[in-house]
Length: 126
Image 1 (cartoon, one colour):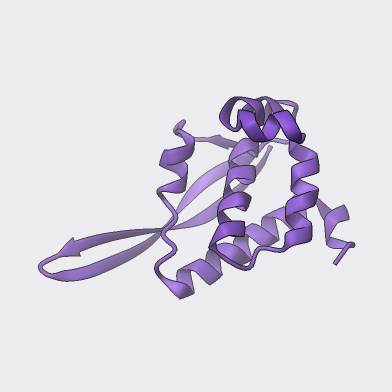
Image 2 (spheres, rainbow, N blue to C red):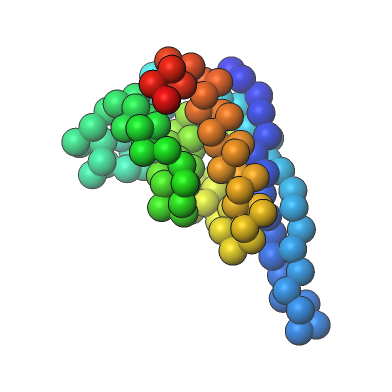
């Protein structure tokens, strides 16, 4: 398994002001068949139509450029992850706040970096 960090952003409303705190979560990327099983369990409607690795190819052709494709990428990444502390898809997605443009750009950059490192054949298609 491949260890990496994903940037997170926690926001709180304190004393009439929105406070943001950047953090990160340690994850392990697991390229085994377990990822496909997670895909089928967590996203059955999509899994019925397309296999996880085919979905990765489709996602890479879209390019991560907005919140919609970022959420799709996070769903895919979730299927490949092993967490130090197990969490549901919704718990995972709640760690990523899209309201901060700089943070969003950092997250998109990290997702692209991960996808290109794990699936280098997809990088050649650009």
